[in-house]
Length: 246
Ligand code: SAH
Image (cartoon, rainbow, N blue to C red; front, side, top):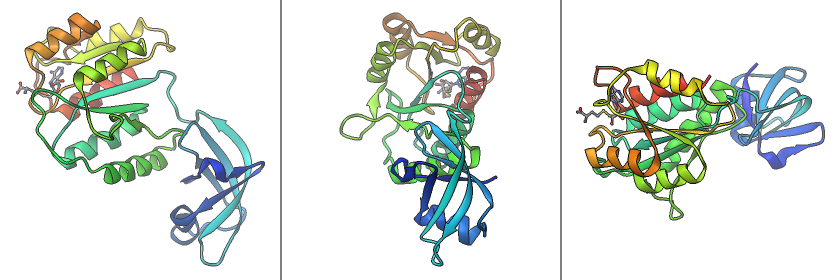
């Protein structure tokens, strides 16, 4: 059963309306017909199991009858924020946000750190990748990208302050820390599902010693190693998310 995106305002009673490219995808690309089953996600926490009921000949809309409402469908029990030193290579950044979406992350905060390289953030491309990943993964939520009020990257410091205010357990991944991934597994296992967490990963250039010390000293971050090998930032983030999200 394929998954499509529905605008929350297009759900009314027992009917929902797919529009534009979502309708086109269903009617023209997948050639769904009346009576065919499909899943719709509103990206903010609800999926709907539906049957296609009608469409216009131009596939600009498709109406569906809702068979079952599925709150939090495909969503993990634990709410996870990824604070990620911005990865300047677009392909690597886009790979990471796609995998983080598949793995169930709730929010991604790209941050400026001492060693991040200046790069232009392509918000519309990232949005397209997130939406496609939500459909492929069949989730009720699209991960939020946490930016400043001006729509720019925040700093590592700001993201840590926010994470503390949200009473998250904070795990900062650092290649120079002792131990291995068992450490992260064991620490997360002690937390109730209701405890939100933040996973903090550095950019290609890694964290400075001051950043690590401050995260631990000021924000109680637990400094975690994933083992002796030096991982690429996106690898470390994906491995950590796979460990902390059930
Ligand atoms: N510049 C560093 C490597 C940075 S790798 C160097 O050259 O040594 C980018 C990020 O991935 C790091 O900041 C860290 O958050 C994470 N990372 C890489 N390998 C890791 C490991 N073995 N354990 C924990 N985190 C790791």
